[in-house]
Image (tube, rainbow over all chains, first blue to last red; front, side):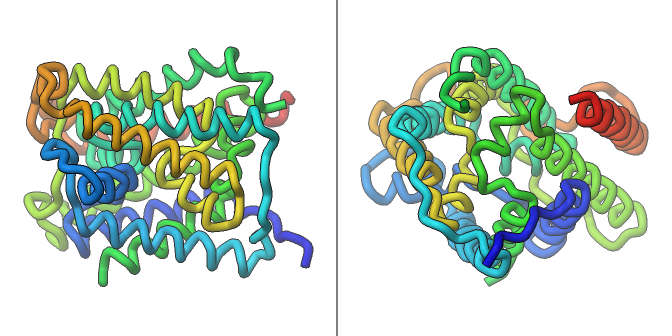
Length: 146
Length: 175
């Protein structure tokens, strides 16, 4: 099966916004992702400062299911390995993001999307800083993307 | 149960947008693919307008929706660090889960790296550091900070997003 094309970004973005809105109305809170990682980490080691949220753990379980089902329906589930340099940077970048997310108390989902829509000061500070940090390092890792 | 269903819809929307593909996300930072910006800001504007109007019509009470806590310095520094990791990884925490779920090994590497980073922060007790709790502002919002009515900030964000969407479309036609 030939993979179907991705949805229009404005259509997908509206869908994502309605999911976020549903979360505000039904759960009284926004979306999240890094909080699920800290919750699992807190189960592995005794770290009192790591944020714990069973709600986020369940939500991320849903993200994995939803992402898989969407890709399956569109013929986009394939095992794909990148070259070693890209895989190493993926792992290292993930580690650096872990540090940033713990320090900031959230990530693109919990701070930028959720805080952005609720006009949270910290959400907007984080979002602008994250874009700035990414644009600053982008030239350094450019070759890894070619 | 709500958490699981909302998560499924969240993951579905991210995958539909193509945000399980690290090259697509990285393109944002080389101006070759602005999907990240377009999806993110369309979502923010949609949810922001939804909350604003539902509250104004009395359907929802803003007091029942928790606003993320602000800690200025940790979020400024954390954001810069996070962004650097983001462009190296090509995925953020949520999209790395989607990427891994669709069979992409680099997505799985980001998930494992992220988990390792979080574990190390926990082991090093980053949460106990003075920096972590510096400059707390509670659940402060932009209207409160700027002493401007809620609706005015909402209008300004919509105007800014629409302007940037127009610029984004011009960049696409230029390349």
